[in-house]
Amino acid sequence: MTPRTEPSMTTRPPAFHPAPASRLRITVGVMLGIAAATLSAMAQAPAAPAKPQWNGYEIQNFKVDGRDALMVLPKTVAPGKPWIWRTEFFGVDPQADIALLGKGFHVGYLSVGGLFGAPVAINAMDRRTGSCRSRKTRCC
View 1 (tube, rainbow, N blue to C red):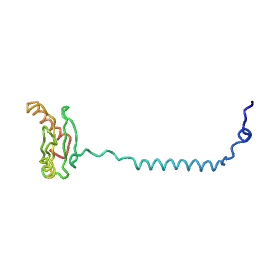
View 2 (view 1 turned 135 degrees about the horizontal axis):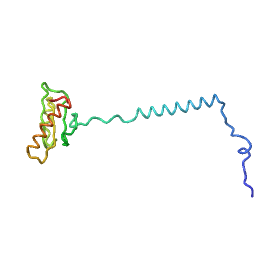
View 3 (view 1 turned 60 degrees about the vertical axis):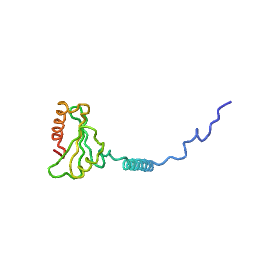
View 4 (view 1 turned 45 degrees about the vertical axis):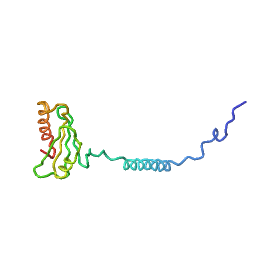
């Protein structure tokens, strides 16, 4: 048995062959369509991640001598740039911290848990104050 072939496939080329000028228009049209789809996808891409927040206030996270530290920034800084810092249990019963932020205070935190006010903890707190000043935050 001999294989059967379609005469149109072996004896003549496919029926549609655009002229060179038409090929160029088709190519440009396809490229413009791809570019438009890409731009549309880029416009719908998610925005850059928002800055970290705590109760509606911006947070700056950093380390001081390997210890976690943060500074919560008020929306409007009070005259004199007042601030308070916490050494443990940040965010527990935050009413006072939220009220101070509302008055323009900065609220800082340094993790010195388990050191119980020992000299190493006091030294870390002193370095945290220096780190805040050297980082040129809006406080200190």
